[in-house]
Image (cartoon, rainbow, N blue to C red; front, side, top):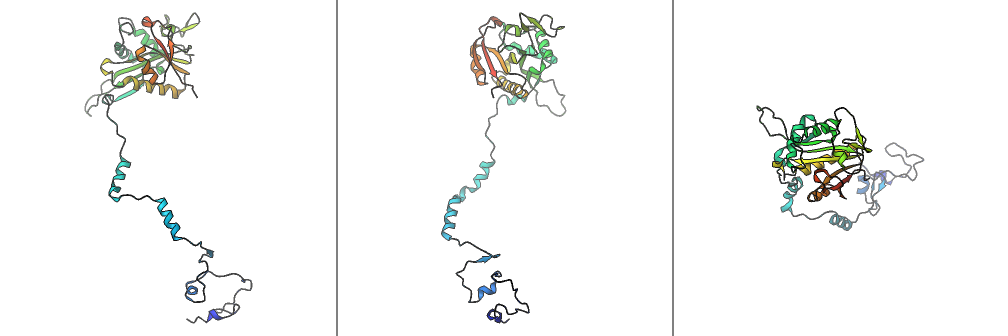
Length: 293
């Protein structure tokens, strides 16, 4: 093909087409043929889609590469996916062997609770001889939502009948209007079977359905399962349930001196010597405030 078109005037027809009269100052994008002809100054900015590209500095690109990448020893490359996928290391505990689960207690668990109470010293425990069936029946019947049990169920084969779960530990509680546990709050109302509530000297006896404090009367674990973190696991679950339900301002309990660190580890505060004389006295008031925000 002849290249005479490059030497023609600007207004001369090209291939039968005459340039537009209003096209002054407008340039078509540079083509490969234009670059091949010696008349083009290669020192001009390179054009693409009608726009000038900024000149690049090869040294700058090398510096950016050095800043954005870190040299890796290829011998260790195959180890990285393993460490990224590796699950956290966790040692199995004795609690895992129980396959535990928690659930709210009901009056059907009265006998189970009596058996768990044998973990307490004789003067503090509830037994059938002390007629403690009534206090458990009262508390599990009046406020079961405040009583929680940790159970264990053995792993069985498909053809084995499902046994009754074993209660390993329990938390038994009621509501009280006082910011600590009192003897009145721990008592069993004389007319509990017929009266909705009983008030003596201005204080509700037993469960106070309008109380803003949850008074724990018993945290007990079967003797054969103590030392397996049953108590702490059960209390953590209990505290979480009460906190998420937002049904009380605080949880209160009385404890002996040797158990104060245990409850402090769960978030309870030492409120000093308790006036409660249950089991001979000598208790310390502990409280966990729930509305701290």
